[in-house]
Length: 313
Image (cartoon, rainbow, N blue to C red):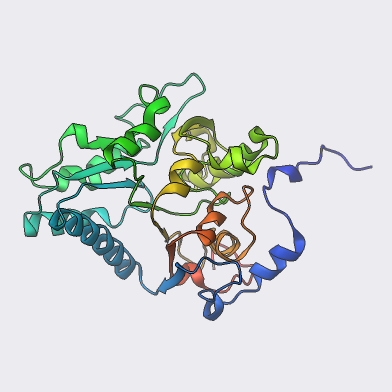
């Protein structure tokens, strides 16, 4: 007799043939194009973490400066993860005394609870606190953006967050969405189980706005890796951008840096699935392939999946 309810439905994507295919993609093959890739979609590998964060800081800085020189607003959606680029970006801004008055910083998500309250901003888990510590507080005071230029989704603005981005960009949408790929296949905190809310209607899913959402179990476990595996410390919900803002941005710049040391990375499989598998709401980040953008992968994340290995080796 088999004891226990079948819990395989916790895994968002399980097509065996697809999983076999992406599992077999070697490091040397990870940048190859698939027939369904958008003409302006690309994958790059950067070997060392310090070079990856430097490249990301330069990408952000270059777009900020270009917009200023062209006399237009720079409206972008920023992540808290990866974060290694932010001290470097602050250095560039300080060294060049860069004017940031034309920049609107929209962040993609923040932790929350079932009752709609957001995590205490004093908490070490707060994305707003992390962004301030790693970036905004490191910008010289005379150059630092004011409070009206920095936005996090929350209960007071979630119903208008999409419109806030559109208004700031004169109706064009974000110039770029920065981010990473989660273990569940999410972008921001838009997890795969949310697809069940849309009755199989992809059109409605694609139009989904920023929302208060319950996190997928894989996302809670993924984030618990930063707390010694203590899943009880992770807030169960979040405020997050949805597919509408992600898909209508003019460009997507995603960076996969989740290397844990000792040869271990939880991101190797999902990066391949999101960049070489089918485009499906069951892997929300897979839409990267169908739109202008680029995924940059740390060398240690791009390594062959192989396995099994053990963490103490």
